[in-house]
Length: 311
Image 1 (cartoon, rainbow, N blue to C red):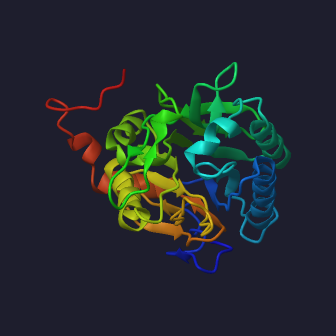
Image 2 (tube, one colour):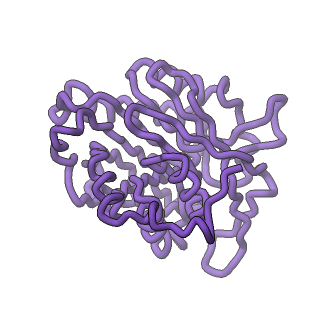
């Protein structure tokens, strides 16, 4: 379900789950246009969150007795342009900075969970180092998890947007898992989606939903993004969400857009085009159990020969 006429959907909100599934999480993806004013970007983001909850939250036509929890997922770099030259200037504390404070307030106000895409995070005494960081907010507005991007995009090759993130960013050193209702979320950012080891580690840790705030370039996204989305879902038999900035043709970095939610069979549940969009879907985890029982790849893995190691 989307407010973007250019988006496509394999269904509207999924039909009611079988009786054995008591509650369903409602996931909302926000594909947002981002400008050069951080304060305006954050205020716009909070306004779109409120709009989304008004449209799809309690009191809306689609809200049922089986809905209890909303998880709103934001884009990679939702408070600043996706250009290295801005990262140190826009960096702030997580939590405690302007962006975190505003999202904490709106999460508590609306009683929702927010997986807050990514923003540049500065160290305790300010930059350097700068991290690409995703904070997770509870319904009380508390930060219940913080993930720093593990894999930095250092690529300068024909057909790719040139970038050396390691010139500005420091790499994270750990992964996170976060329980929200009957979901266990694992988080990656952008380039992290290309590394199946991280996804498999999350699967081994018991995750059933992988969230990737991921803004791919318009040059690479059409070739790679959907394939990676579906691959990570089918590798792990998890739900997978990717959330991008909306496209801005005037920017030096042109985003691909196409935020999407994929089911454990690799099927696209709902997807956006290139413009701003609000996507919503109810997650029925009975579908996950069905995928894992039909094709039990987890129990068939040859762990006598290979395994995903957790340090």
